[in-house]
Image 1 (tube, rainbow, N blue to C red):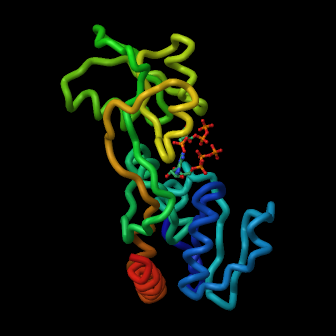
Image 2: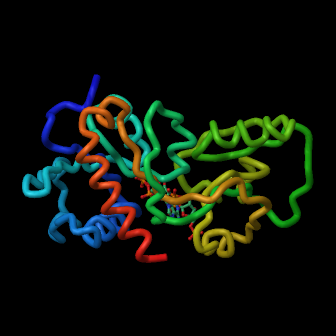
Length: 214
Ligand SMILES: Nc1ncnc2c1ncn2[C@@H]1O[C@H](COP(=O)(O)OP(=O)(O)OP(=O)(O)O)[C@@H](O)[C@H]1O
Ligand SMILES: O=P(O)(O)OC[C@H]1O[C@H](OP(=O)(O)OP(=O)(O)O)[C@H](O)[C@@H]1O
């Protein structure tokens, strides 16, 4: 399926952490997202004056909406992009919602055979250990990942670190950074061709705004 509706650009916008920073960036780029949208429970927000429509999505679902073309473009963390591995174009590093994906454990952790690794990112974690020739058992969790080594569910975890506060407060240490994370602008492959002018013009405005910050 391709991005429907020739004129309106449909944008999959993640709720939560990224929304705050992405809406700020869009406003700085001159795209009029009214501030009363920040607390709304509405899931589809039309901005006809900007020729845009925002689909308010759970962050992990953004690449799916874009791959299927129900959104022409979307904003998503590199972490989700790596994990979901969808067929989309990655257009622009927005430089927002910075954090990193790391291997984490208790300070007295010792290597064992076939350790258990808990994570929200099973695909990223499996690839990381496979590339190192280390056999591990990956356990998928959906949140509070730091609990796993504390209660004996896993020997290590693969999770996000931003300020390091969660690690400090739970007596855990970052053992290795896997990759740095920022949010990216992604596009549906068909929409990128069919709505190239609108997408390119948005990219240009965002790029200028991002460059002015550096
Ligand atoms: N400290 C952080 N922890 C987790 N993600 C972060 C952090 N800082 C920035 N991010 C980025 O924000 C994105 C979305 O995080 P957010 O917590 O809003 O979504 P979520 O984990 O899917 O939440 P929920 O499951 O509650 O909807 C992540 O995919 C990541 O790219
Ligand atoms: O380094 P910090 O600034 O402490 O941030 C990292 C923490 O934030 C995220 O959890 P989140 O708040 O999304 O909650 P969750 O455990 O429910 O996923 C992430 O999974 C870490 O636990």
